[in-house]
Every structure is written in C-alpha cells, then in structure tokens.
Image (tube, rainbow, N blue to C red; front, side, top):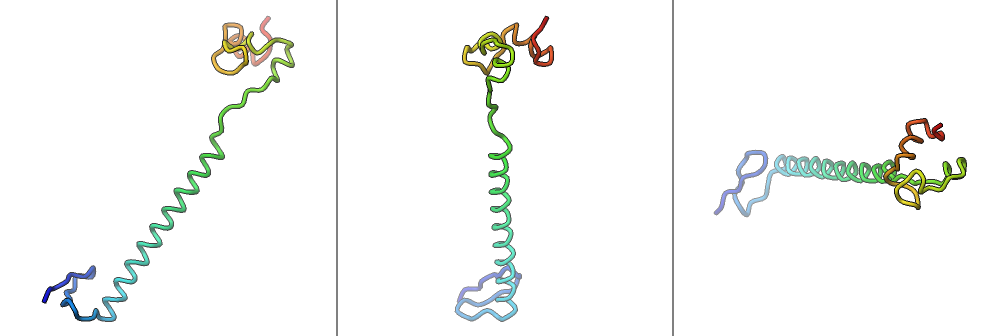
Length: 101
C-alpha cells in the first residue's frame, strides 16, 4: 500500500477514502486557486483592452496646412506630412504652432 501526502499535511493510504475534513480542505484550496486564476485573467484582459483604448497612434491632420495656406511638406520632411520636422517646422512648433515672423 502506498501512502499519499495531502495538502493539509495528513497522510492517507491509497485506496482509502479521504475524510470529510480532507475533502473540504482540498475543495477550499482548489476554489481559492481557481478564483485567483480567474481574477488574474480578468485583470490582464482589462489592462490589455485599456491599453488599446488609451494608446492610439497620432493622427496627423491638415489643420495647420489649411490655416496657414502652406503645404504639409513645408513643415515636415515627408511631403505628405507627419514625422520629422524641417527647420521651418521646428520654428513653427517653437512659436506655439503659429507662423514664425
């Protein structure tokens, strides 16, 4: 006969039924572990969804080009706009997004 160790530190002989106390202890430990695993999964899902909603890529608009009458390429190195700024674009930014004088 083999002797089994239970989570409660009590020994039981293989083939014999566990006591009611041992069953309750095993069930309680399983329940606590299951609740912990589920709550961790929910927390990870909430964090993931939240990061998708919060961290969105910047969306360039033609607002300043429309207001100033200048093309996007005058402020940006990419003629389509967005990305690195030219020297004129840096001055525009430093001047509070107003045309430098």
